Image 1 (tube, chains in turn green, brown):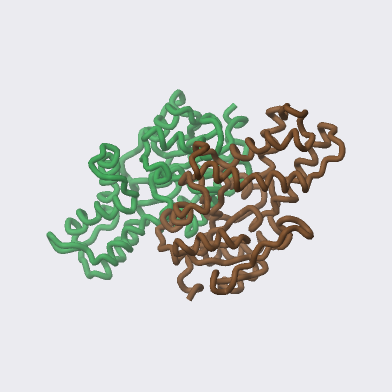
Image 2 (cartoon, rainbow over the protein chains, first blue to last red):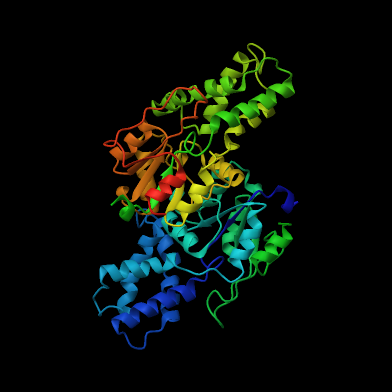
Length: 243
Length: 243
């Protein structure tokens, strides 16, 4: 049933398609090296930056901030974090060029090892798009660098509403002229899928146990009554969907 | 200079990338055959449908119609045209399934013979997107069928404003986080390029002498002071842009 009716797959990106932690740690570490910062912990910095993500989205959703795309939110949280991690003097700021370069580390993330192969296979049967809180420029640059074979870029930025706002999930079938049940949301995060399903989308959970690194906190795995599919990889998703 | 600063190319689609006339004539002819219509002239039907395009856009721009995507406008003009061309009885209507299928002929258009090869080459150096009055679903379906290697789909529908509204041209650099002069509009229509240039975009005119068929009306070719480049094909555009 899921196989027959699904026409498009839309993907959460950070943690689901790409490994944000390794990429951010890599580029932050490179910048720390250029700046001569000693004892810099790249993965801890990446984790700290990512932990500011959801609170920053909530400030936009609550109207405390005007609409700001993810690059803008990342820039704001970086300004706070840089002194805490020795990338800027206490009370000081990164050089604007360095800050801009590091914000774009989120454009330069590598896919999980199975991701491109799985997407290439899924694309033969389905329309594929990200459905991410990342902005259009970010998702486009990431796809071009990483070889993600999207058919189109869908983003919270197109509707100026961050997931889990229902408008963002509903935008995917609307842009594609499909019914919600013809669109499947793929994510490594249960809350994203629960919110997508509430709007009528199909859902597939992908286990990404290394999102927060070896020994990092585990994502809650949704039960079989909460999502349509649970898989370990994108090729397994293709297999399950006969793609 | 144009080579150095250009980061993204955005393309008019109908007539520039794809041959709407042959594709619409083909599918309309097939439907006429199924319906047993005698003496049906597919190319004349395609021309008549296309001639209703600009007036329908203007009705939206003038506020006479609420926002309606191009599929909706095509459906409206098809309802008027069908009886005139014998596809429906005088005063009558096409079967809704047939009408929907024929409206989607605009999703099933073939590229000009040089288009995919040129785009494949341009894509190595530039971000590529349509910037079309066609809707997101239309442009996505067309690209998937025809193998158009877009990096993302940009459409008037994303900003609910049809070209030549300045908002549509300006949306391309805005979505891509570029300056207008880093984006080049590619089109076979001088008026599209003049409007794009007025918003600061670079412009390339592509000669498509067969858009309205052999012996059809010729598009006015813009002068060297009106556009940045004039080419005969997408591979020539790639050559001129060192891609």
